[in-house]
Image (tube, rainbow, N blue to C red; front, side):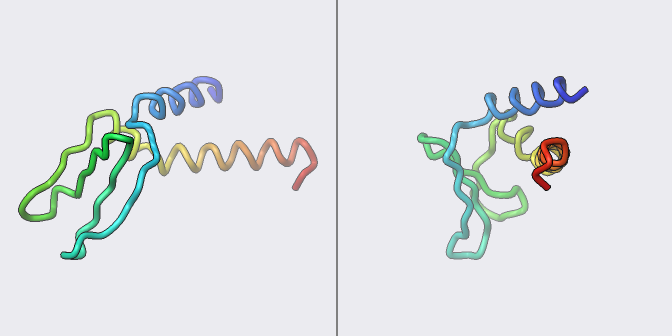
Length: 86
């Protein structure tokens, strides 16, 4: 299960726009995210006016990030315990 989960996380990472990614605010206080050398930029669809749409791969990467990070942190903690580092 762990190997499959790590493979899935790696696949999502490889499919997403390469970094570095940035996050910031526009003058109207709306949020934006920018990723990759091409500067692909997008804002939440709730913003009025213009918007940039993320690729399906970027959206999948972003949507899975909280669960992926939690899984990886648990795995690191488990490995640290096994190694006697915690």
